[in-house]
Amino acid sequence: MPNPKNKKFIAQREREERQKRYIMIGTIAVLTIVIGLVVYGLVTENVFKPNKPVLELRSHSISSSEFKQRVRYQRLNMVNQAIQMYQYGMTDYVTQIATQLQSDLVGQQTIETLKDEMIILLEAEEQGIELSKDELEQEIQYLFGYYAEGTPTPAPTQEIAPTSTLTSQQLTLVPKPETPTEGEEGEEGEEAPTSTPTVKVEEETSNDPTATPILKPTEYTYEVYLENYNKTLENLSLEINMEEETLREIIKAYILRQKLMESVSADIGETQEHLWARHILVADEETAQEVLAKLNEGSNFAELALEYSTGPSAQTGGDLGWFTKDAMVAPFADAAYALEVGEISDPVQTSFGWHIIQTLGREERTLDQATLEQKRTTAFETWLAEKRVEYADEFVIDESWSNDVPTDPALPPELLQALSQEQQQQQLPVAPSEGEGNE
Image (cartoon, rainbow, N blue to C red; front, side):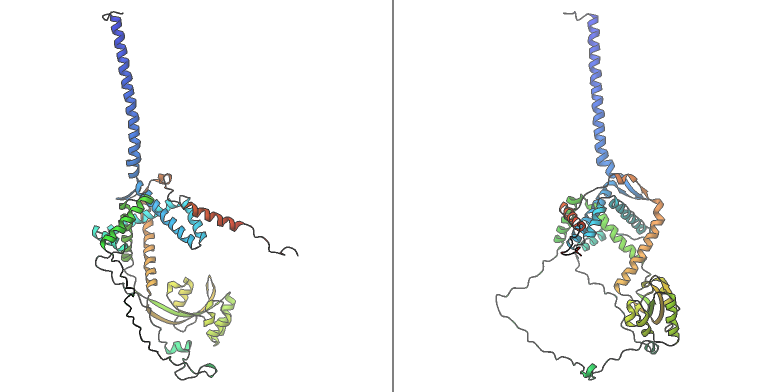
């Protein structure tokens, strides 16, 4: 056994101790680096990456997490539409949706939708259009059908102007058909029908004590609304991992869109000049000139329309009824609105052919509700298109979004299978009928 006091032995022990310390330090260093990398990866994946901006516009931004939720929300809506359309037998539409779901198109559509929403948020701020938390909460309640102060009275719809009283000039141009008066005989000597006497029917009453009572609908209370709202959140969380804040941002953007639409279309009046006209539509200019010559010679417009016109209005003497300028193609509308009442145009060419037009009347009429809403929507879409161009260079987009687009939810496998079977059946050759090909 070596002497502990031996210098050589002591030096060897010291070297061994140093080696052990180095190994220990190296092991700890390696473990620290590995743990650090793992932690960094987890933090990057669960903190930095989800919060990384995908889209930015000035003070507004959309994180990667929000983007993924919106893509899944878009896909969910498309899947539900496909299922509904398949039930109605619209397989071509379902095939289109299936193709879109298999591409990056949904991601690109989501990016464009988010860009529009960011423009709307920014423009609302600049125009002083606000949406408080209380107002947002109230609007969400309305969307779920809950009205704390009672169901609001529906706003009155725009009424269509009654049939105009024809002037003497218009009666000359388009004679009003005579209506048989009471007691006059109709065709073939038949007497005009008289009113049918009303027969009074006595209301039957029942004293049956076992009669079924009238059921009262369940009152839609605030508690019922909360139940429906929370159920919706639960379903969205389970199906597409959507957070409540994302849903509320979608609703907020929708409400601000409506407010901006009201602001942008505020100068659109509820009335517009309407024109009453008739026309004769032919295939070529030569025929149009021939018709015009006959009209100048005094021929009846309605009779020439019945003889020459290729349009569906030929059977009614070319009468197009009342219309607004934006309801017709531009060349036709410009020519018709340039005429005085009773005046006949020179031949006008459109994509439909050649027209001879006669204006029969002009009136300022109240727009029906559908037309008014369409005009407001068109005005807003025109405004938004201009804003897209204005803000185009200000958007900051992380193009790596295309590498991480969710592919769920997808169409149900049973729906894809049924769709595939129908497509295969459509491609099968049709068997010849009996006797066919035996000539």
